[in-house]
Length: 428
Image (cartoon, rainbow, N blue to C red; front, side, top):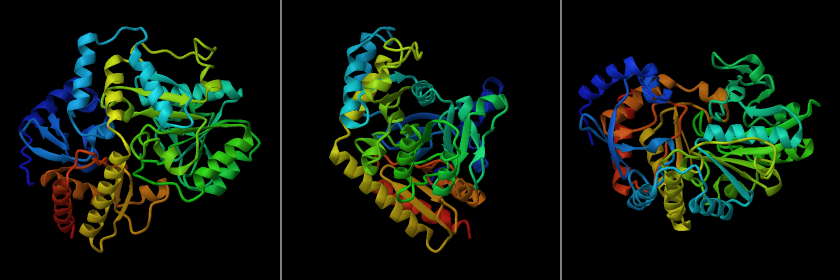
């Protein structure tokens, strides 16, 4: 599906945006700088396709970075949002939908008795960390290099591979004191985790994405999530699993259902809002009842549990039965196999989980941030640009996951694999 990327209107809009928005965008990855081009301005989406303002059409594997598991503008999700909007867009008061959504999440996630909604995954993470610190009376948090848990000051910190290390802020404006209570551990490194949890310093929480997808998709090695659970139990810390990406995408009950490792607190977002702004934190009743007004741990939000987002989330989850997850897993497997075949003997690793996929330009499997950073990002950028020119909209960063959806068709899969093969051929 070749396109003519003249970008006339996109270029004009970008020039205007640069004068009005920092960097011309409202979230950094949209700028497409990682692949050496200006952003594409989108006009509309339908199913698994995007249409830009210049009339170009793309098979979309970004899907709003994960929320659109049913693709763009699904009729039942749209109908639910329209019906909710006709009743009013926001009340600042409880609604039936909030209770129904909490009940649905609790049915799907064994570790969740109660839910507190927010307007974003970042807010949900902030709440989970505050709650963990209040529950344990401790401050120190362990997170993993390459994991992104939202733009929370204390979590905007990373370190390279090696032993566990004291966190340093990775963004100007984050005070060193904000990151001082965060310890960074390399992902998939049991020895580093043991060292960090046996240091004797009291630990409030171990915070992890069960399927990290912000350095590309880097699944846990066998036994690593079980070790997180064991070390949390041994130290009296809470295990906080960030399922903003994996929640309700990789399985009905998220990564916890697939792995069998249960969290004390779970952070949610993306799919739970069905394409509208929403996040949540959930967990055992005794922990969740520490939140105000039931308890003394303060958290609030004017638009938390917004009726439009709740309606979209409920409609989205209602469509996600066992058959839907089997279809999504099958499509993802077929896409991964097709991309491997398209790559031929090139130094490429294709990693996948249901509804998630990453193409690493690497000679060896990627198991941590150091491995992801060692990939040939210039080759990925060139390949991604070639995909765009052939009508395939892939993440504009080696460090972002692809998001196959239930709207993608076998025909679109074939077109994608053909475009990928042609794009790979341009690299030689």
